[in-house]
Length: 313
Length: 311
Image 1 (cartoon, chains in turn blue, brown):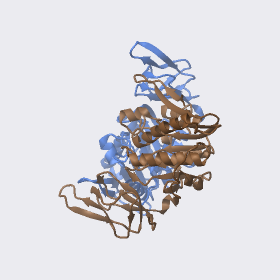
Image 2 (cartoon, each protein chain N blue to C red):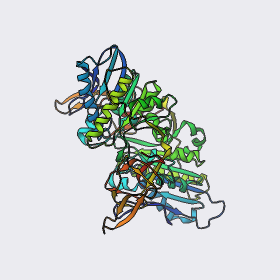
Image 3 (cartoon, helix red, strand yellow):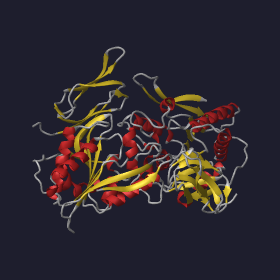
Image 4 (tube, each protein chain N blue to C red):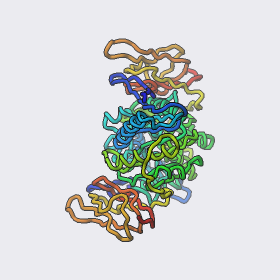
């Protein structure tokens, strides 16, 4: 059932509408629980498109297994998604810094407020992000320290490779996840892949996790494939590797790859002279869960993140 | 005057990124004036460049008081200016929301750190910056209510208004907030324009800074006393919004005194040319902010009024 969450008139012959697809069970009861799956807050993050598609497709294939309400919001920032812009175009504002929004505010503040109001009342919410176009990420759930203990049992069901309890902006105040958690809707932030791209393998993995979560919450009774146990990490276990000079970064390993101390991760090269300016080697054993994709770097650019002290299976 | 390198960073293909500071006088670090961190803040850069010109003359005439040093950084982010972009780099980082920065982050974070390490040593900090919405303001001094803020001190610029804002979580990484946390008396100065130069407003801004520096005993300078500023809280401003989208034709300017039900703007149908909506003043007041883009969306802020204030 397609529904319009909010609709606002743009300047020239168009309405900006945020929509959701509410999928109801064949027999809805008072006890039916509700999951909201949201994506597309950042217009350059497309991984959630596949997840929403796959969730809708699997439910349509077996509606008899659905016992709760599934609300899909694939495009919270429709202009950004279609214009391939991370922020809301025209306003050049990060929509994930506007929550919980204002009912009587500007256009974007009203949209944020309407989205929060629409999701409120859900029993769980999953906010699917991708990385930006600079670095590729493995499927992971990011939790803010404030809500980590409450959210950890849900996060472990998500079939991700890693749960990172950190303090990055994604999970900070002013984000959708923070606002929903404050309102009592447990909200998980999923990050994976690369900006402007869809990785079906990662998408399938997270979709499997969402069905696993739904099964645990009595929203879904169909079969779910065996899911994996994620590594649970804190900031202290993550090694950030940054460029020590400017140049063009060439990676020497595959993403999501285990490395040993001293292994070559990549090089920063000078394309005029053919010389290597910096060789980047692993400072410790671990899993390269973040790897740079956009090659142009200044000093300080993030090249890789390594999760240390885990065994290579 | 001497020119200092505040921060440098090599680039793969472009000329080295360099933030230059212009230092006047010698002695205690009295005042720092910071120009644009964003690539479209042209008016802000122009004002800073004019301050460098005037301060050079004042120094040549021995008008910088002894044991007082003034630092002007006319441009923080010339790279984005040359690219024609508001924000920094491939990920559109807003340097003004990276403070206090750090040595372990990416380029924008390091730039903020490099600048902040230098400027936090100064007693008075003035930043020329812009608002996220495109439009024109009445020139004013803006500051966050951090507990360290001093609106009475802001009065000494002699601009018509001082606006105090209660910070939101996202404001805690702005320069103004962090500068105050380091006990610098920090002020953000808003002139009426951003992407274009307005000579009158620029002159007013230069005069305001010189007036403040004189009153704080940093320079010798005779100037008009300016205004006794009206201090307002941001939440006291009355937002006037468009209730429909279309072509925006403003009938009033920033600074005008309007009365209840005064016609303020027309919103014109972009296809048929007819007036879709007439925006009228919901209250008596002074127009503090006006939308200037020729297009407007539903619920966009067309104006902000200072409620029940008259000229």
